[in-house]
Each structure stands twice: as structure tokens, then as C-alpha cells.
Image (cartoon, rainbow, N blue to C red; front, side, top):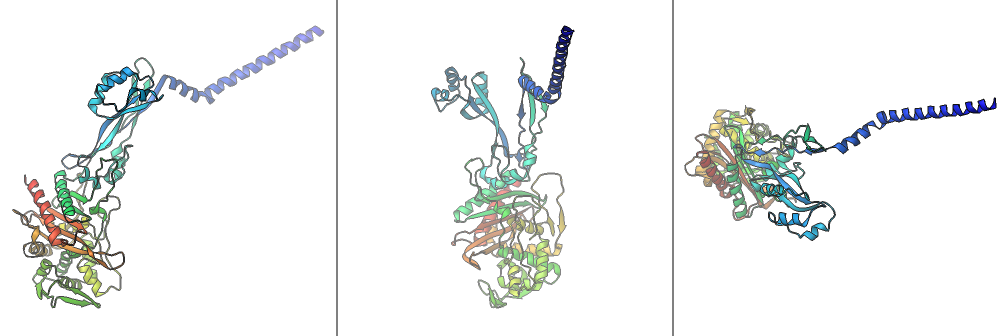
Length: 534
């Protein structure tokens, strides 16, 4: 009886042990499958395969003729690995100038950069050696063929591929594309299998013409330097197509230089008091309202006028002038009387019709659009100053677009910078009679007024000069700082181009719009028209 009990006890113990073992086994199976399954599967895959990113090629920025303004080129860096040998070093030295000796490379027990920025020819030569002790890493380098001529517009992208300035920045999503991925199996063939397709960056085509951009930048930079100015801008518009052909700003910077010092695009982000260049816009509104006529005579004597206790004066007493002669001679007294006849409401509505104080239809970082003094208790003196381009601001782009109205039979166009099939929006802002009358005044400016130096051979042109004092930080205006400008239309046979130029703070020996900006306009217009007529 006792022996049977001992036998039963041992049997129960074995059964319990077997049951516990079975439960542990079942639990382990469940754990492997459902708890650690993903980890083990991933671990297994990592032993059998690896993956790598396939970078998307950044899209190019092109001019209207498909000339590259920004393009990505493949570059390669060469690295030495642990197994890099002296024999490898000698073979590479036949193709490359290695600016270090072999012993300095072998001192480092890690992957070491030994040559940067291999070109494609060097890359092919090095790869043909089939060396096991080296590794070549490819990367994209952004290159800007026109350099500083267009950098303030196009901007630049960093080595990581992200756009940092200008159009490169605001179009970054379209230019970047989407990187892909591929799996490489660790077998004899090591054949890669693409799992995520690359979406290459889009190419963006601008309306900019690189030849006209070159002319604008060349002459602008030359005039700024020659006249000891702090900077300037130039814009060329195609009135017929509604496209921007050139936007130049100086000083600029070389986007290909990693030590670049960024400069702003003065043509797009600066707003200033335009001065006399605004007078034809006020006249156009007055004619369109029916309160002025082009041959109307206005007495500007004795050469000054007292408005709200403040004096507005001309450089001399012109006595009586026609409205057209007021524009040609740029009479402040005459412009004041025109402004007072048009009135503040007429001036503001007229300027806004020409696109002033409204954001331009161009997407660009910090683009300027200016303001107009429109306070309720405005004085006669303030109304007069608005009539000759003070107590208001506008950007070079806005002023160029405003003058294009005189070339487009009274229509204001939303000039575009991207070359596409989208029709340019336009709206009438003044009547054809006012356009014709103002154009006659602008012709007189060049033939017998302040803009004589804007004449160019073989072409008739029209335009207006502007010379404005710059505001002083201490209040009022700085008598030693000016902005010189000219807006013109050329040639008058087709009225194809509107060109606006401005020079900021030229030296006091030569600072007026007629003496400085008018010949700059002529230089750009002459080269641009000769090129377009080829």
C-alpha cells in the first residue's frame, strides 16, 4: 500500500512538470508569433536585405528659351575605407591630385574623405579601377550659370537640396520632387528592387529672357558703380504678351559661392517716394475725368505757390505752360495745380487703378506694394505733393506696370513671371483719349524736356524722368540723398517694351533722373530692341 502511494505521487509530479512545460512551450510559440514576430521578421530581413534612398533630381529653373538659370549637376565625394591600401593610393594618384599622403589616411581607423567634388570624368576613371578600399558617394550640386545677374530673383538652394532664397525657396515643393527607395538583397547578384518610385522635381520655366536680363544687369551695375550709388533696379516688360523679360537688381551676389552675402531684390521688395515720375498718372486721371485737356494752359508764375502755408517751387519761373508742357518740363507748380483740380479722391482712385498700393500679382518673399496718404483731414499741400510723387510710395515693379497702361491702350495687365498657357488678366483703367494725350506728353519729355538723354538711334521712345529726395531718419528729407528714375516705352511703333530704371543715392555730381536714369534707360532699351529685332 505504501509503495503504491509513492508511485502515484511521483507520477503526479511528472504530469505536472509535463503540463507546465507544455504551457511554457505554447506561451513561447505565441510570444514568438504575436509579440516578437515583427522584430524577428525585421531582424531576419536586415540580415538578408538592405535598403537605400533614391534621391529625386531637383527640377531646373529655365528662362523662356530653356536656358538654365538654376540646374542640378551630379557631384561625387571619394572616401577611403579601413581596407584602403597603399596600392589603392598609387592607382588613384594616377587620376587625381590627392592633397595628403597615404600614412595620414591610414592613421584614421574610419571612413575618411580623401577627395571632394569629383567631376563625371574623374568619377568614371576612379570607378573603372574597381578598388575595394574606396567608396564613392554621389550628391547633387546646384549651379547657377548666370551667377549674380539673376541671383536676387532666382535665389539659391543649399547642399541639402532645400531652397533658401528667392524663387528657389518659394517653389521648393515643386522643384524638390519626392525621393524613392530600393531594396538590395544580400545574395550573389545583389540585384536591387525598387519599392517606392522616385518623383522627379518639376522644371520651372520663367518669362525672363537671359539675354535681356544680361543687358539690364550689365548697364545697371555699370551706372551704379560709375555714379557712386548705393544700388539700383531695372525692369523690362513685354507689353504685348504681358510677360516680364528682365528683373535686375544691384548690388547682387554670386549664388555659386558658398561664402555668398545675400542682397535683396530692390525691384520687388523696395518701395520709395517716386517723385515726378508719378505726374503723368495724375494727368491721365484728370483727362479721363473730363476736367483737364492736353492743350489747356495753366499759369505757373511766378515760379512758386503757397499751399497751406508751405511753398512749392519750380527751378525757374515757367510762366504759362500747357498741361503737356508741365509734364515735359516737370513743373512742380503745374503738377500741384493739376492735383488740386483732380482732387484727393480722384488721385487715389486713379493711382489704385494703375495698380499702386495694391499687391502685385507675383508671388515673391516680402514683395512691396507701397501706400498712399489718404487721411481724412488732408491739406492742399499734401494733395499737391501726392500729385508730384511724395506722401506715397510704390515699388519699381508697380511703376513699370503703371506705365505699361500707356502702351496697352489704357489696360492694366497682371504681368506674369512664369511661362505658361494661362491668359494674362487685364482691365481698362483709363480711356483711349487719355492714353493718346499722355503719350504725346511723354514724347515731348524726350524730344524737348527733361528726358532728352533717353533718345536712342533708330527708335522713337517716350517716357518720364523722376528725381526724389529720400526721407531722413530725423524727419523731413535728406537734401543730400536722392533716387533717380525713368520709365519709358519703346519703340513707339509697336509699344512693345516698358522699361523702368532707378538709381538709389547717386553721388551729388550727377543725380537727376534726366542726367542719370534717362541714359540708363536708353542703354538697356537700345540693346534689348536690337536683340529682339535680330
